[in-house]
Length: 161
Image (cartoon, rainbow, N blue to C red; front, side, top):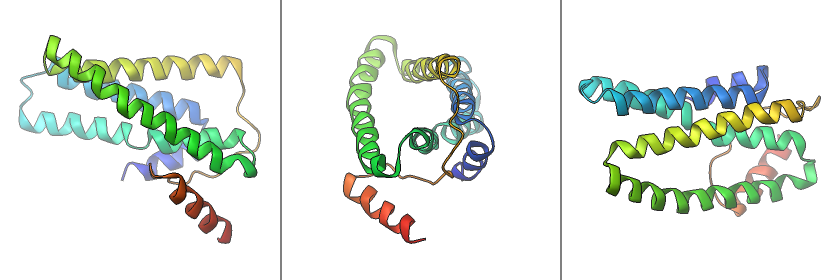
């Protein structure tokens, strides 16, 4: 469900502002889980929903932003590069998070995730000062985190539409 409002916002506004906003919302969701341990089961569900709603579309909005700068002949390779860096993060983050949890306890997971989103938001704000949004933008398309082969198949399907 989060893909639809994120897609509308990403098509209507600068995608970097959408990414910064989703990162800030993720930090708020993490902060609720870390600093309000007695919020009860419904509070945990609400903060987890906020966190999931803010983080799930990050990859698709980031990919749409990257595709704005790529030509049609570079999109499959860009998709492969995005998947590679996603995989690097998927390998490194659990190793770092597990060590933090072992040292500081379970709330350290959400502290680590919040810190990553703070870095992402600051990076987005810094990049806005360096480079403007391209005049030609692609429409937002939900891009599942998947393999290189599926990326090629999805590209072929979109080109037929």
